Amino acid sequence: MKLFGTNTSPYTRKARLVLLEKGLAHTYVVAPPREPGSPVTGANPLGRVPTLLLDDGTAVFDSPVICEYLDALGDAPILIPRGDAEARMRVRRWEALADGIMDSAVVVRVESLRPAEKQDAATLALHGSAIGRALAHAASALGGREWCEGSALTLADLALASALFYLDLRQPERDWRAQHPPLAAWAARMSERPSVRATPTT
Ligand SMILES: N[C@@H](CCC(=O)N[C@@H](CS)C(=O)NCC(=O)O)C(=O)O
Image (cartoon, rainbow, N blue to C red; front, top):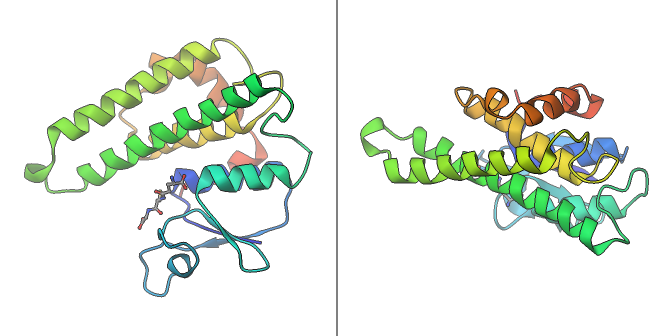
């Protein structure tokens, strides 16, 4: 299978982390969707990355669907709990929180690329506040624990890492480590993982 993505896309990184943590054979193809001739638009009508292309030509999108599919392909490790409805919900909720941070950070990024006089201060404030609240929620939910959910790595950790390291890329002025020491300690450990090291955002 092939994963179409870009290195700066946090949603792509989440899917790549799942592929690497599960040791699934794949080819990663850097494919900015707006480039002329991009293979993404032919595979995914939404023209977004990540898009996973299976060997039989089936296209899988978007990142939560890709991650759930990949997790079902193997058991080592299981990244989305299978037997426990509450634990499964909590992992998917972490993913929703992380994806929401990404969504708002992308809006802020797009808005801040506009000429200063055309930027919408209300939009920037709305999404900046959402990110701030989501970070506080994540720090409080994580506390001093090693993993977001349970006693092992799950999709929750991979999603949150993708979101936080995207903030480092796009909003380096937002000092979430100083504001939320539990997140800083957890992120320092996550940044050492081979999968995280293998997926730089540049
Ligand atoms: N909800 C989607 C979001 C994917 C998304 O918005 N990806 C962005 C890149 S970060 C994209 O491909 N945008 C279209 C473009 O850049 O033309 C997912 O989780 O996969």
